Length: 88
Image 1 (spheres, rainbow, N blue to C red):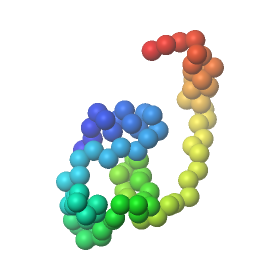
Image 2 (cartoon, rainbow, N blue to C red; image 1 turned 90 degrees about the vertical axis):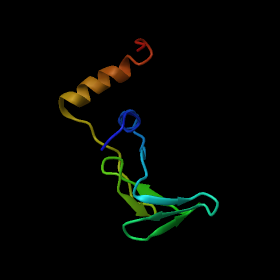
Image 3 (cartoon, rainbow, N blue to C red; image 1 turned 180 degrees about the vertical axis):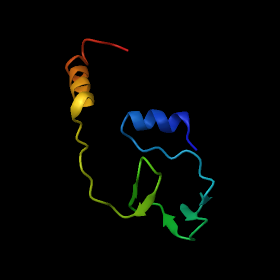
Image 4 (spheres, rainbow, N blue to C red; image 1 turned 135 degrees about the vertical axis):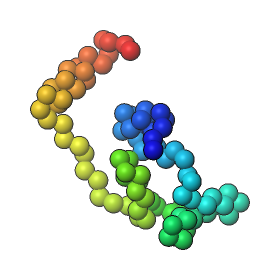
């Protein structure tokens, strides 16, 4: 399942969580519990989100910058060179 917000955020290179049917959210306690596992996250906990799958992992994970090669890399380089000229 996806949403327009998630698709737009992905285009911006940002993770987006849309819909939280698998979570119990306790706003007053600033906690979230995963229904399937019972795992609880509290405000301030560090988590990492997989922007493609929605997987949530406790703690920070190593990240690497994406490498864009081939034809897509060429087109995106052209876009970067024209970013101040063209307005969409």
